[in-house]
Length: 490
Image (cartoon, rainbow, N blue to C red; front, side, top):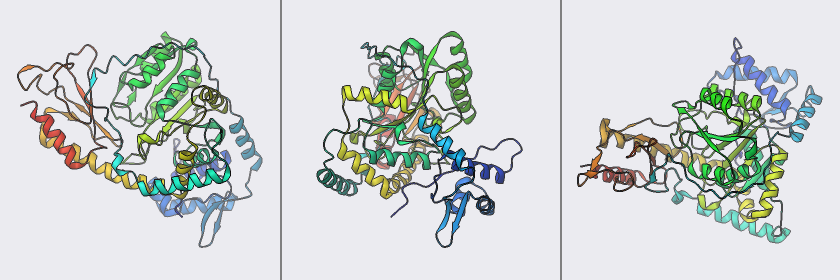
């Protein structure tokens, strides 16, 4: 059986601290906090050295030092494990109890005003496919076998009655292992709620948070369905500037000086729609401001799995001062949106309020689907599938970038993103008249590129940027789409 998730270690070096000291301190801290539990198998020294980009001998020395201190234990021909009897055990238990009892300062609200308004920055779209996965890559045989096992399990154990609105224990436990091992987080199952996709998590979060506590801040270009959810639940939305390093925290400080802020919604890993990643210094500053001013941070980590160039930056929820973070993730992009599976992570108190809302609108999700996916996560098949499609999506990204250069030359500008399933393309230099010589009005006859969505600056009469989803297209389909798009400007 494959290991479901590879344990990852994040090094945040302090000034003057050696790699050896940083790694030793980080591993012992992860053990103390409970993220790495007793009996957990550590990555091999070669694997961890490759992951961190350090010398293997450094990792070996750290392991030997932690073994001598009682944190780790080496088992011949089996590997290195977290010791069963730990030094400072009482501290570890105390910290774990604090984690389990953690309660955030999230307010609640019951108002409902139907104001499903879209973002005024988004002028129109050519297609809803602007960064979705390719459903043709679904491992149907794996899924069908997992569903068959789940159906047998539910029928034999009477699981098809009403259950926990937060989701099945099996899936929440699988998610806990994934988040703790792969996302650098340290959460309990009481902090996890399974939902029917990230949009449901966004809506539920805005339903539980209280608009009376302050405005909801989003990036200047943001995900329109999220903005609509916030406004439908009574929030006044204020936009914060952004640049090539993501959300501008200096501008956020100015907003905080002018308005009471209830929450900030952000897509820090691959910002929607621009694809940029929020820099580490800004992540830390955002969390400091959240703790200082008491606002919630809604972290929409919608495609964390698809990062190609380097190690993904840890989620906001795994960093210091993240007590007020509501972490939202999706399993839909791993397989297909039609599976309707997502999750949210927050304090047990907040998750309890979310569960109350779920009982009013949905009662619970699909037990069979949740058990099937939990089975695939536990067996390691999910990780194997992610590795396979990640390589394919990276090749499609590179092909799309090369074809843009070949077909349009310097008439379009773009950066090859480190991850995600879409390219953010500056099309402001393309001709403002197309085809028959008429004005290329955005709302009328601007050329359509399948698998894309058009964006413009405020008050612009034609689009300035295009978000092109390459994930759901083969390389041949990418070339055909771009060539057809170019033909419309001749």
